[in-house]
Image (cartoon, rainbow, N blue to C red):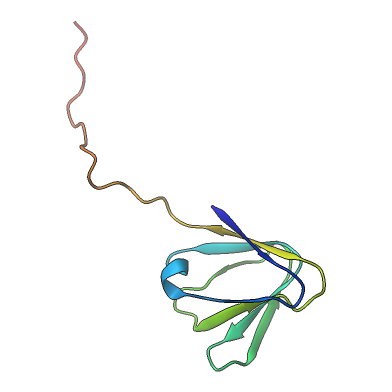
Length: 92
């Protein structure tokens, strides 16, 4: 989990690879989604959750003067190189 902090009026580009399968929640302030064509999208307030995958959103913007925060949750990545123990230990 990570936190994105946006000062008043700040804008951050959405890089698809960084947001793949991520779920975000606005925890402070308001965040506006900027659409692919540059048009302003919806403004999301505190406790609003959203996915960005496949939405065409190109940036997040803080439309207010106060700092906004977004918590970003990504699914756990399993290490495919670790061996899996399929045997049940036997008590001796």
